[in-house]
Image (cartoon, rainbow, N blue to C red; front, top):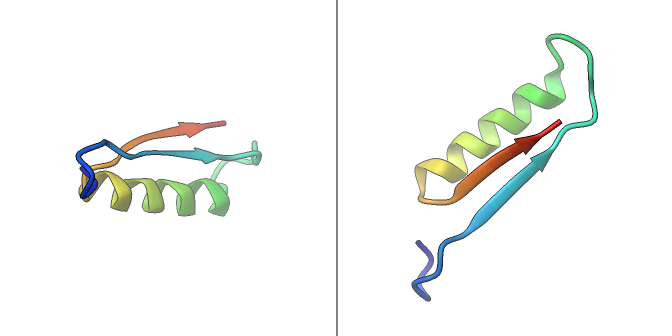
Length: 45
């Protein structure tokens, strides 16, 4: 939760369709970090 009492949502947009995409991996790491501090996350491909 943020200091205002509202939840934060973070969306990662991935345009790469390649298996093993480094972009997708980086987004997953970033979203995991956001989730660990209380944000709601979603990866959109």
